[in-house]
Image (cartoon, rainbow, N blue to C red; front, side, top):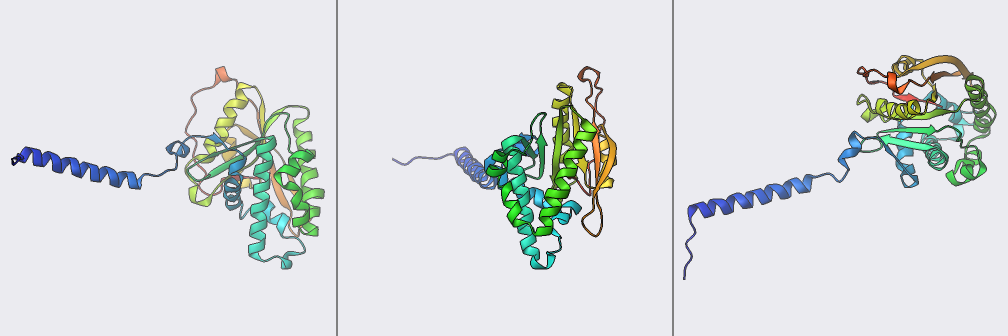
Length: 272
């Protein structure tokens, strides 16, 4: 017996089929990157150190202090490719060390902005952290001048300055924050900073950072940081400055509604 299909039924079947095809197309185009990563700050773990390290390497590719460590008197021995690989290694070791003994936060679909934090009372100087993170490899990977700059110049002056400025206070230390060039201007750094600032304020603790660019001072002042002093590393032909800034805690009950803070369109990096 033949079945008669009405025009309405045919239209319904056609519409249903078209919808299914459209849905399939949408599904094929759907990204597996979690949508929440675009706007939400998240903590990363050890399995993500390499991705975060590469992101920071790009953020600090033109950073004066990064070059200070790699442009020693053995520069001619290293090709540009070798320097870049070592730069990536350094950033990856730092991310790993902060995963072990501090805190690493990120935002963006591809680790677009990464911040390395040392919460109050924590540090990455312990031998166990140095061993597990791979930081010990730097002694053998850096050239002889690079080792002197890092171990005899950079590290001692950073510690000495922290002690001088902060004394016995406990505070949140922003060791590194960097946004990849392709992701700048989106306010990612602001979100990472203010996320930790809210925690610091709730605990009535200060925040401390070193900026590798004087151009960034006014940017961090918008978040409540105040310039304290300038230090410089002088083993190279040109001194490399760092600008010390401190943010005092804001009483949570007294906080007003935040005004919009312009994003940093050029350089969103702070060095430690």
